[in-house]
Image (cartoon, rainbow, N blue to C red; front, side):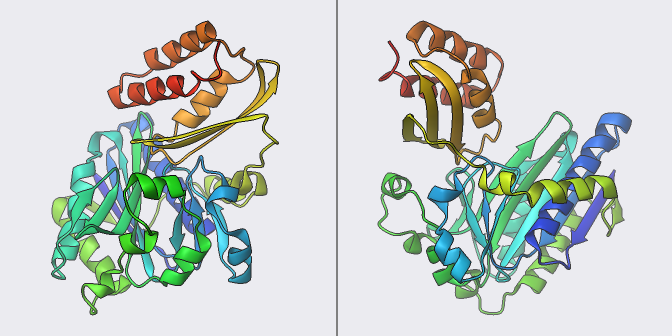
Length: 338
């Protein structure tokens, strides 16, 4: 088994996201073609940027004027989940593994153990958060295939709160659902818990905890990936179409929030025929919005047809939680289906 520890010296979000995905594709390829098991820890920081979830609407998640005035970049990652703000006061971690080594519980434990070395006791909360006394300092997102898995997340160390709250425009329904009045009350910097902590020493502690889990492994400190893949990923991640995902003027918008996330479905209709569709969501199931879009495009909206479409989607997955998502989505169409 090969283990990689890679610490980026670059603070460019597009370079870092491209490096991360290139490493993912490399590990996926090695396991698929050669059955070689491998696992990578990638630690990285970015200059001021918003990183959108794969299926989110940039116009409803970001204060674009604030971002422009404060020289905050807009980027979009390959994983699902919600938008986050990065700056140099935020350390990002990525666990990239062949599918046989994927262990989400172990990943979180590595982070929690590293923080415990600074006297910080944390707990896993909600869908993907790490918290202390109910205040969030870390969120995660995921990307999986048959052969590899990616789990990445943020660690707020000393991020400027005014930039977070100015750049992001969180869904007020999300806040109401959690029973809180302000996103400010929900986040905390780790330096508030231990003023000795910084990204460099935390990076060292995470690396040490990571290596303690795999003491006899072949360890490498450089990334292995195709330069051609890296250049392709840079081209994708920096393209305007990828970042802004331009939308049409919808004839009908369906919106709701469930325990698995929010969903916004924009429909361009000719009668009850779906001529075009956009699906925005902060669900961690990154594959559901594109699958839903593909299944509904060029379909007729009526009860029988919708029942058939969602039955087919449910039959294609063995994941009970995803089945629940499709059941909720089918109900969302009840008001317009005849």
